[in-house]
Length: 132
Image (cartoon, rainbow, N blue to C red; front, top):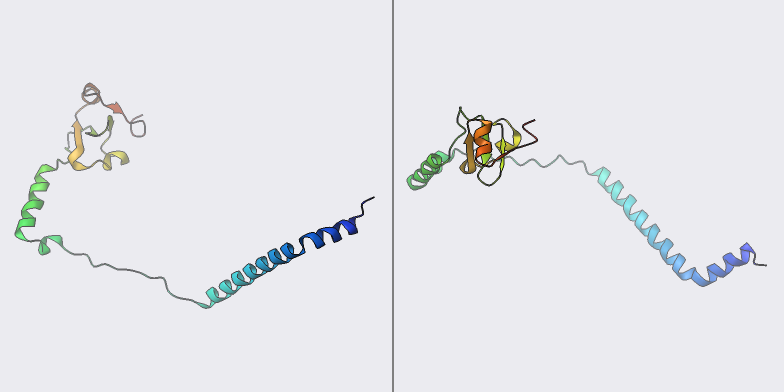
């Protein structure tokens, strides 16, 4: 019959080097971790805060870049007060202007609809997140 102490002895003789190596590795990891924790608790630094001054872009622009800015403002349509629904040229969904998805639409891609039928007639579908 096979006894437990002899099984342990056989296991130890067979795997002694590997067991000692693994235990040594685990012990070294534990000591390194604790040393890091102790060293970290000694360091009490304030968090790094990066502050960037606000610059007025119109004062730093040359006359050429001011003209480009004015031209781009003319090209960008804004949400009309009469727009009941808005959509994107790149999508087939329409939203209410207050919907968070509508606010993500780039101004140059904005399409204005004056009614739900107007949006549907142009092939747009209601967004299920905004329109119930």
